[in-house]
Length: 366
Image 1 (cartoon, rainbow, N blue to C red):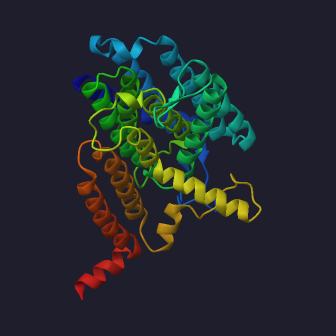
Image 2: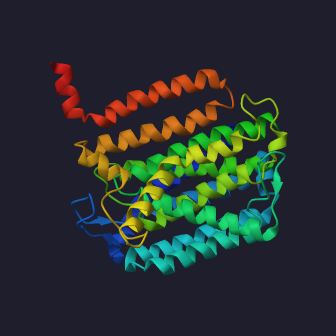
Image 3: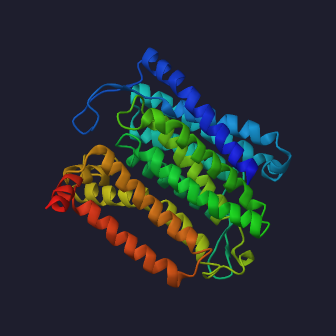
């Protein structure tokens, strides 16, 4: 555990220290987020925060490579190299997009290239945890891996609409993934789970280091550089956890062994995926491009209900934490305890969403 926490700290420290540098570079090269009708921010803000996150990723991996106990992560050098190269491709693509506003089809092609490279180098679905595990042929493995990576990248991009929202939600998801993957690697001795554990710890560290600069009022945005990087890393962590760990090895969980590896990725990615799905349905029903921007995302709806930007972000954090850690808790605690607690917490949170803070405080005063 100590080694992973040290990697988390290194990623957080490097990201925090590099963010002012990224902000200066964004200002110098004109990578600025202008104020548009669909945006929430009211002042021109530098982008390229993802560049600092990339620095945190590299620093964490370099540090981990010198730790003797982290050697199992680096046994498969192809997988490690694929993660770094794919991340680099998306960071370069993101830097260009944040500066020049690249069209959606070009971005999608770049994302597919990074995802395809990841799958080609062996970071992909070997099997699906269904029944006794369905072993996938190479074509299906690559196709499913690319699809999951693309969906995750764009889901993270879709929720990046309020100061601190994407970094916080993905950081929470990464912490949940870290807890479960560490449990797998430690409790069951599954070496394939160690890659997921390191990536999850690194994502959490990147988010923690970036949030002080990005929380409302943000001094810098992560931009597509950051959102695509986080999406790639989170999907890689989930693929390593779900598609490469044999579910038949998970004996003694409080839930069916074949169900938990499927449930956790869905729960961890639940909020971004829900926002993505609703956006696609909403836009296609209107005859629009699914990637056409609008101002009807989940966080926009919270603002329309009268919540402040900060309170909307806190509510989204709460949902992400509730769903993610509910799934993780099923590995340790009986579902007969987890489900009632989850339902009660959901009810309380829904009440907070329905009633903006100002109205809720006025009711309490009465």
